[in-house]
Length: 426
Image (cartoon, rainbow, N blue to C red; front, top):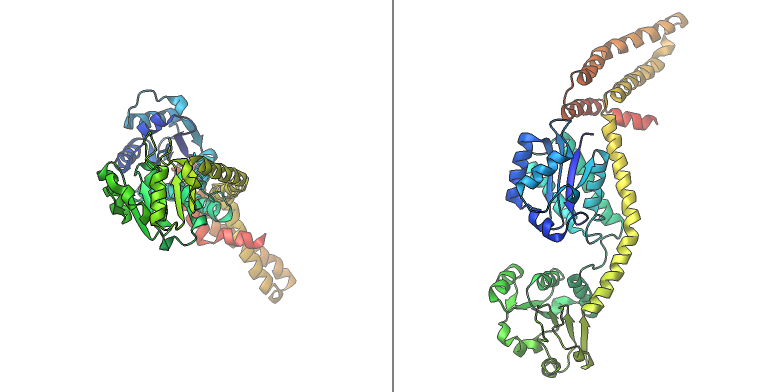
């Protein structure tokens, strides 16, 4: 299969280069337009924070990895990017790599199931831009099946592997029903934003945000249907919250022992969770001495993350087994589209029908005619299949492109249900 792919990812390039080469949707559209004009008949462009990859079936079989690398670099000229920052894949290797990507075992965070949706969205985007053909659609279908199996049949995506998610999962263990609880997230940078989204997704009853820069908080609050509390006086409202999660970049504590002790007295010491996931810490760790305060900092979160990562790594062999099964299934299908197997299967299909009909009616003929019946029916089958056989061979001789050849052969196999009949006969 003439499938070519190049990848620049966390395996090959530092974050500053990955960020520089990242393509947004408008840039991906421009890339696809350029690829369709010069290099590929069909393909896929995938770009996330940790990888940018191009897959495709070349117009010219002599197209090299270097041409594809140069094309990608030309889209986003960046100083310092060179061939050593790319991994190159061909045919089976390219399909296998895509299957590993969508299943999460090639991610920076092992088992990150966000990549499944990112790859799926990239497939849809390529299809919307008419960059998918017969072969790539089959690759996409097989990749999506691989990703689904990895998620449902293994625990590769189980357990929190980010500090933000680990904090929310720990909160769930302490308060089983979050729908009746209120939470305050202090700091709406990346870590705080992710934590706030997780709380929303877990069904928190009331969510409030506070941040030194009010504009950033307002944008996130609108997206999460959360309330904003001015940063200057959020301490006056601490007693209202069952959960306080802090993730600022402050160099000093923003919540002292006295701040929390005062709030707890106002709450009549109703249980409160304090999650400090900032570095350096936002909350004075002495607060854990206060009754009914459940305090956790970044160190305890990291322990949870490391334990979950270890569990996910143990699932990698199971996912690799799924990848290999789906890879074998895909190439079994693809190899069935070759000319020789199709001619052989087509003749076997008609011969089976001939033999069954002769067997049903053989007793109606004399011994002398039985031999003639075999000869005549075989001649009929040979004459019926003579023209299709010649035309199939012409596909190879004419140098017809891979996709058109595959489509014609696939139609023949589907029309006569060759694969089904072959399976039933085994």
